[in-house]
Amino acid sequence: QFLLPKYWGIWLFVGFAKLFVLLPYKTQMHIGRWLGRISYPLLKRRKKIAIVNLKIAFPDKTDKELDALAKKCFESVSMSGVEMMIAWFMPKKHFDKIKFDGHGMEHFESAHQDDNHGTLLLGSHFTCMEMIGRYIGEHYDPFYLVYQKHKNDLFEKVMTGSREGYVTKALQRKNVVSIVKHLKRKGSVWYAPDQDFGNERSIFVPFFGKACATLTATALLAKLTGAKVVPCYYIRKEDLSGYDIYVLPALENFPTGDDYQDALRYHEILEKAILAFPDQYLWQHRRYKTRPEGEESLYE
Image (tube, rainbow, N blue to C red):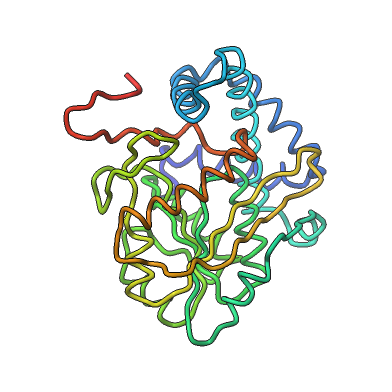
């Protein structure tokens, strides 16, 4: 069935990607940055979404400053497309040459090696996450990641097959039973709840001061499994010499039983990381898509 015409574009992408990742790493990243600059004025809808989000997060910036920041965000997200190809298809001997610097990795290692608890590595959608997923997956076992299933069957197969070349297993977001099972077996699971999935298991919690539909699953997973929740974030070095991974101590007194306060605590951690590296967060996502009853869309 994957030979049908509707899948030919995916096959072309796979063939191109496997050749592209043989280029020198910095060359690939410069191409990605250049494509981001070109795409910025062309992707008008995504540009508008990014600007709306950035205005909420940085209300004191002028329109000119917001535009400049948005351009860097598009460079960053375009480089993330290159990084996806690198993470999925680059041969290990080339990938191992890329530099990864860990800051606070001992917090994750301590939790990962604890035979009494699973570990929920609480991540977020900083744009270099595919690279970090491969690096951690190749160095720590068992390591699982939670992801959103793709609508295209062939792309789903390529995506999960590639990721499962370096992580123990990719777990679908909606398969909560599977996530709970692997946490109870003392596995380490990477999970990023910072996207808008509507009212499904969500409550409204301020994110940069604006009500935001926020998943309560982090607290639920910790409650059901007793897993340690270890926050982290990760960024691409400005000079393209590699990546920095920042891991914080496991959250104490979590969950508290108050979903609002638990979600707010995650947002406070995430906001602090974003303020330090604003251009490397995924602002092109409609993070404020779901609105409280009676409130108009922010993106229309």
